[in-house]
Length: 230
Image (tube, rainbow, N blue to C red; front, side, top):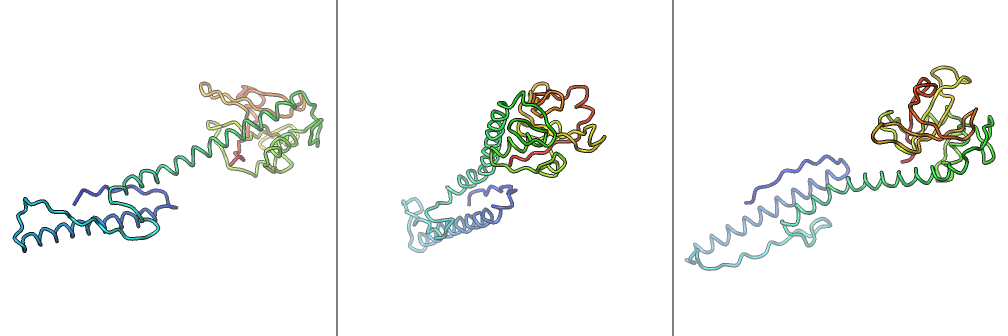
């Protein structure tokens, strides 16, 4: 009986299916061995020389949704393909997230220079959360109205793992130290330095780009980041 390769099944969603398939493979291989032994026994009982060419009947497969048309030798290939499904899905998800982030960044670029106005939601003027909600809505992503409420959305992202499309949150003179009062969106990350560029609606410059960390105001008032693009 061929050596059986033990696979590490880590994906909980497909674990049961793979266990069933492994069990099926074991049963089929055991059946194959049993058939071979049966042929050998018949040879001995019928005084057939072991050197005489004999044809072992093909293995009859269990007919189920998972095994129709399979051979024992195709099972390892299936497992290899199946285990790559998660990696492909993750890659596709990252690619799609990057595409959406790029679309939002391109759309937001047209508003560079628009003036800041408290409570404004665009497109002629914006406050910080108004800008972010406006540009994300273009991509079909609904965000809350205020920066504090937006901070309650999405999943947390470490500063070292910022990607285009992530939201960055800061405190402001109005909100007070340590409280969310300003929001921006990452549009670019330098892979070498780790520095990023974000777009935001600034009270002094209107809609503009800013480098982070800046070693100044934004570095001191940074609170955290959230990922809202699934």
